[in-house]
Image (cartoon, rainbow, N blue to C red; front, side):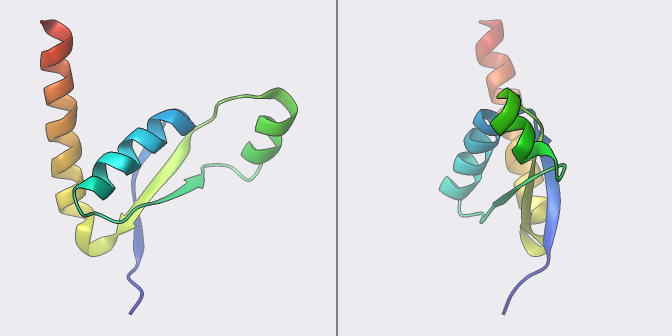
Length: 82
């Protein structure tokens, strides 16, 4: 049974998207990435530009994914302040 995939967040670039997806997948949450614009692929090929990447999770995982991201971000803020 295929779940409805829901937008969780837009990452700033592929690297950030890979970090977020890896973190969520390590915590048991399936993810999918999609370019936020149909022109993004061409912009990467032509100009090597980094553009937003949308990260989707199955709807039943949305709340847990949001909580994990909030926890992840607050832990990173604490580390950066030290």
